[in-house]
Amino acid sequence: MQFVTQWFKRHFSDPGVVFLALFLVIGFAVVTTMGDMLMPVLASVVIAYLLEGIVGAMERRGLPRFAAFLLVYLIFILFVTLVLFGMLPILSRQVTQLFQQLPAMISQGQQVLMQLPDRYPDIISVEQVQEFIGVIRQEIAELGQTVVSVSISSVLGVITLLVYVILMPLLVFFFLKDKQLILDWIVGFLPRNRTLANTVWKDVNRQVANYVRGKFWEIIIVWAASFVAFTVFGLEYAMLLGVLVGLSVIIPYIGAAAVTIPVLLIAWFQWGWSSDFAWLAVTYFVIQALDGNVLVPLLFSEVVNLHPVAIIVAILVFGGFWGFWGVFFAIPLATLVQAVLSAWPRLDAEPEPA
Image 1 (tube, rainbow, N blue to C red):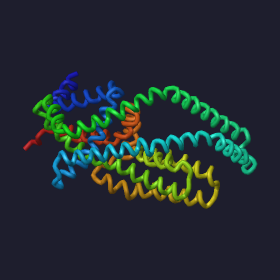
Image 2 (spheres, one colour; image 1 turned 135 degrees about the horizontal axis):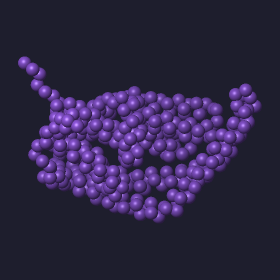
Image 3 (cartoon, helix red, strand yellow; image 1 turned 60 degrees about the vertical axis):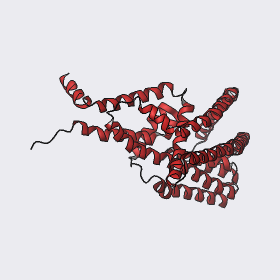
Image 4 (cartoon, rainbow, N blue to C red; image 1 turned 90 degrees about the vertical axis):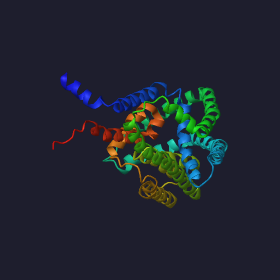
């Protein structure tokens, strides 16, 4: 008990440490308990954070704050309009077409699988193939039930979408317009002694800003490159697959591996083992290689290098807590943890004897 008391006094005797610990605990509790209710606000903060980088760059070039904010906000509204009325209808149509073609694809796949026991009787038996086909049919049936349940709750989905479409642009507008006013209001509730918190925040802010903005541009670039490549080759569902490839970069390592399966499967169902399939596969893997070896080092040059195991653990932990946003911010949150742990040992450092 005495050891615990001494450890607590040594680490939490500094008011700055107490403030940092309380801030992290309260922030975690608020997001965990009220994350669903505050999701439009949190998403708007993220978008405003993205746009603030562009506004700041324009200000540094001599453009007044109000003019820079207004120009960036109008571009943001134009982008949202293009997504809602340009991309979403195409995605909806291609998803519908894919589900309509799914039975034919399954039938074609079953025919190929049933040929395997004849070609490789020593490796694969008819029973194994039938069992595998049964598992696939069960998964398809469960997927169909999920689609039906989603369609039943589509009214609530439309209402939620309308709330996001109306509220989020409005919140982004005020977060950008009244940024300093909001920050001053928040600072008014904070204690004066927050040196440690400021130190951690400066490091994390630099890392998070680089990561979030870099990740946004990585998604756009990878999506555009994939969409153009799929369209040039004439691959079906080019927009849908391009969006999936773009979003896959959110989850390092796992995302790229997962999205490769539908891309190659749809290409195979369309062309079989042909030269078109081979060239598309080569092009797709070239895009993935350029993303990992060229684009990522350029966009994330200032992000702290984290071990792959730490990244995967962060994705699993934070994704389990907060879903999509937890996965998206897994690396920044892991960076926050690393920054706090790096600053913490300095608190109990004692002067060396003369």
